[in-house]
Amino acid sequence: MRKFLVVLDDTRECLNAMRYAAMRAAHTGGGVSVIAVIPPEEFQHWIGVAEIMRTEARERIEAHFEVYAKWMRDKQGVTPELIIREGEPVTEILDVIHTDPEIGVLVLGAATEKSGPGPLVTQMSRNSGSLPCPLTVVPGDMSKERLEAIT
Image 1 (cartoon, rainbow, N blue to C red):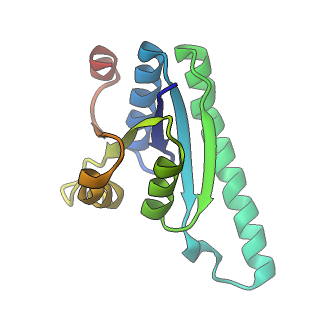
Image 2: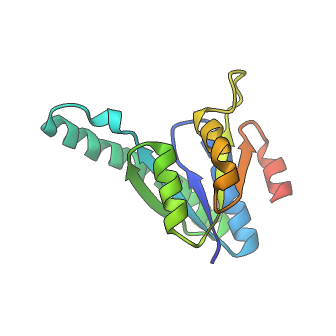
């Protein structure tokens, strides 16, 4: 089964990327893998504090994921899987793509700020020529109706 890999983070554009991935998966009989990456700088404290912060970050991610997962199951009939990694986002995303042969498309949301589409879209676009799958960048301000029309 072909899967859409989508990044879960705290950005506004994440919502459109999730919608797009779920709708495309539903329309094509595919699946959705959701990756959340905890950056290493969050844990540069004493060992006990770092472990508490790691646990809290995972709990936040799981709660955030469950909101999207419920919508995907209820509205799109797609049951997503959650992948939580720790490290540099680009490195971890590339590792997941290279190790899971079912991932067919990487879906990212583009920020709407004048400063650019966001650091992840910028960095992944630089690697797009060597990715083993297509990269789909979803505009962060695209309407739900337009997303539905193109998926």
